[in-house]
Image (cartoon, rainbow, N blue to C red; front, side, top):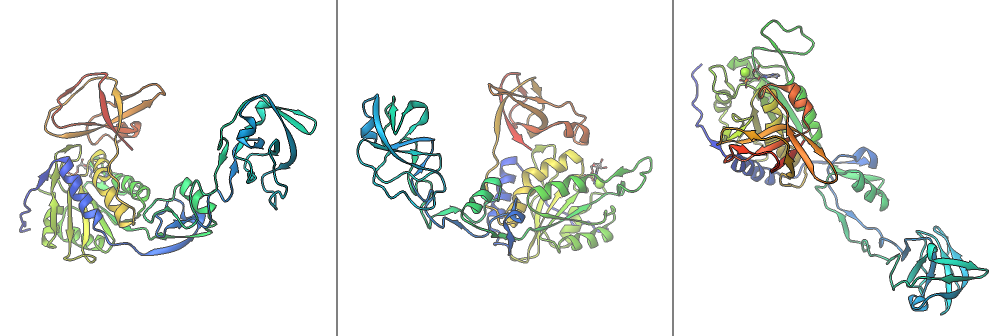
Length: 415
Ligand code: AMP
Ligand code: MG
């Protein structure tokens, strides 16, 4: 094959991530669909969720006890006359006016009558027939959430682009949304390359490797809100590889794995160059995952298709997906961009590495209430799926650090 040379463009981790975020923020809004509320769990909201009335709709008691005028309990002990009971869900508001020296028994969640401005907790009272003795002062507003304090009618509770987790679903339920408009999930093609790779229902020969990357990627794509489309394995042969890449470019995003290193049979970039791809980077100064490729085929949006060429080593594939492909899938799914968030934890044992690369080392984060620790998982390098499966996070080592002593606070990227 007459190789088309691809200019090498290796960026720092931060620059590579920024390039992806810039492209992600320029994505047009996807199509939408309307789903029953529970079917929308995990999906991205395409319409604002607006308060249909004040929340709470009435001044709400937050304790069981007595609705009082705070002025009446300014000095205690004091005895007030109980003129009735207000329970949650009372169909009609109480009609009798509450005069000075009077109180209503009230339950959590019930509407506080207009003359009352505090709720005395039952723990600080003792009943005396129709009266109540109160032994503790309460200030105006105590144990009452005023009408509209959480949200005013007509205000936006959730913006489009929000992922519908359990609290977002609860909020939608609280305003009576039986159906909700969400963005369509982007279709993400997965193309594994390599002559040595066989499908998992085949018996591998002595030098063959089962395809695990398509499976880790499918899971990560689903978690990022995409719909994985698994293509057949591509051999290290340009014609068939090109056919499958062209097929993959029919989806909203193409993710390839393998074939992006410096080897003679790493043909992915060459085939993409033949298809007049633009390359935004052909490597990132990270480990694992250095040969990661990001680019786009076709001219102006929306027809242009983005692609990632992820390195074939299984841990590299997972790391580079997390760092670069995930924000693109989220953007294609209509989700609002969010920066990578790092936790910090104390390093249990020292780290020694060569400087120059930002490293994402599989690690176990053990969180205790008082201080949490993180420990690097012993591994045989970026092919070691078993080590990766024991880990629950990555410790991030900046490129200028060759040695991090035990006990130092380090950045942790949650998986
Ligand atoms: P490559 O990036 O093509 O040079 O592949 C690097 C390493 O990853 C090689 O040891 C491959 O056998 C392995 N590898 C590539 N693709 C896969 C895959 N789909 N599943 C598991 N291992 C793979
Ligand atoms: Mg290969």
